[in-house]
Length: 390
Image 1 (cartoon, rainbow, N blue to C red):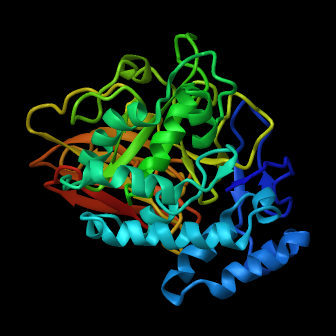
Image 2: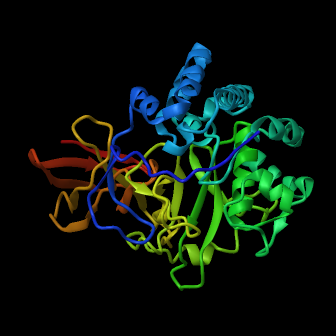
Image 3: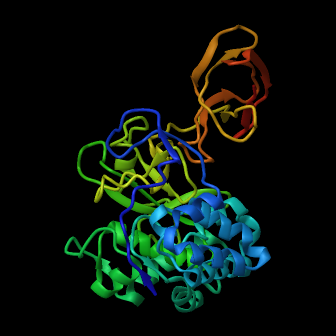
């Protein structure tokens, strides 16, 4: 089954622009629409969305509502109930039958296994076919990372798709890439991500509109394993290893605050920024998080130090916000570090960090709408996440 694309404007009542438009990057305040609002926007397709909601099993209701509330408007106007029901049921089946279900949080499943699409590609019903075709390949794999590496090394030969600049278009769906036998890095990434998702492996699309040295753009894949994201180049398998690829050097030069030279990962869940699709700059409804700090060059942790992370959440305790904070040596009063926390434009695991002496005592200072605050921090631990609260 394939559902054609129609180019509609995104929900006008969802996105409120807070800054002027820049290439491939919009800062916005996001409000996820209610089910009632989606049904209204669905127009003549309303009955299909209602059917999907009515017929989904109670244990899958959370997933169906997540898809419907976060889907692009053109999808709520075109996707059938059968398409949505099959996608949700098979996604849950793959997740629950996987050896790593306990290691994949529900929020990661919802955003990176459950979605029926990656970016703006044609909506194919790929999940059932991919599950049947690729499941035997990973029967002995114990982790999602290992399984993804195996898939990357084998599926492209099975479906007879290879990289070529002569592919029909960059944003090909799996069916379109298999029909052509050719795909760009974007098309290859979409195919690998869908293969992973069909087997309960969380995967997402990552890329940059332009390398920092101006040498072009690139797309690749991130896979969730052991509580974090790991990258791999689609159709560029490196054995059983992840976090290897020819683009590591270029990615290390990415610039976090430069919309054109930053690195982004897609998010089906609505976020304050959109993914900059180089093949169609007009599209603002493919959402993203800025993951540049995960790739930009980092220095080795100095001896006797630990990397400590900091986050600030608004009063409701959920959404991250940007604040300035300073770290002082508790004894001498010397300034050790100053920086800004990261907000929801960045990956959920991406926090501002610095190196602190593991046996030291420090004072963290910050100011918000409620006033000035201080926190004593003694003997920080490696990868410790320090919550700065209102």
